[in-house]
Length: 394
Image 1 (cartoon, rainbow, N blue to C red):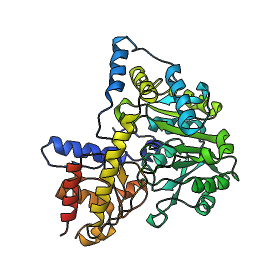
Image 2 (tube, rainbow, N blue to C red):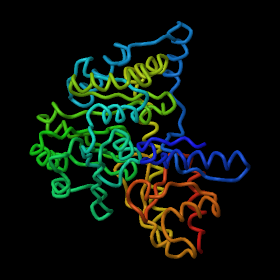
Image 3 (tube, helix red, strand yellow):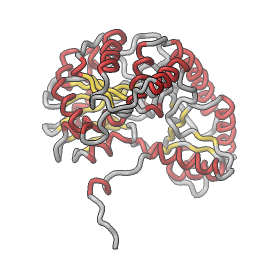
Image 4 (cartoon, one colour):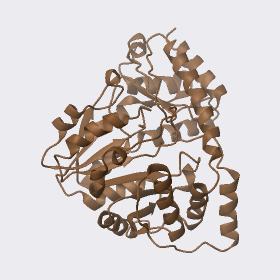
């Protein structure tokens, strides 16, 4: 007898990025030479001062439950971070610490979406946004922007997607998977559209805030449209900037009533994030920040090398990005050159099986004919991967 699964779980897909990474690791474990370019995970170790703080917390016995919303110490550090780096003012009761940035968005979707509520998501998008909207009975509305727009939607496109049913609008800048960031002027123009839809909540996902090439200060929509604060959630975390992906600490700042509702969701799912990880995250935010610059320098060097190398491969076109540790090249010409390969999904399968390169098809992010390549690996691995991709179909 088979058990009938819930419609909600049948409506969503497994995370493509996690699936590709798991497959690459399994092939490596089986002895196959595979270069993994699928994971969105810095290859740097967590800085020593952060690890030592966690070790001390264990030795001090800080191993019990904490408040669901996170420790006051960490929430206060997040309040200080928002004020210091973003010019945003919050009280501790406007902060929720969660088990990664993914849970922050999941909590938000569960807290505000009713059946039929629409969620406007620019595409290409981070793979989990639409599925988390579906799990909350929402209806994803995808707004597509190609390379000719540097993968950024226009105010006209946003207006065309908004309806009386729009409950949530997602902004991810710099973007996973494209690496593109909205300028202050571009965000202000989107904000002008959003003012006409007071029912719509805004989620600005700033996870890659610190991984940018520009010397100009980072801006999100609240920096240029502060009047939208009563209905805007700022999502961030320590995973990318401090190479703490496995520690699973994300956080959200926003209106106290929404944060309270998100806390209720979290209280009935995971409860508090790991106590030890919270200590480490507090030290990351309050301690020396030089580690960010060290990683950023390496990512920029890798970015320049990979973009130049990809553009030398026939059938591949790659834009330089504004940040993150991804590039999102168009590979339609490469697809067209390969017999039996008809789309980016089949190309990704071909590359992992025939060339030993694991990357994520663009279709997983809402734009076919592209692939996402993570540059969060060594220069040697990137050189090997480019050589193998370049040799395909030659």
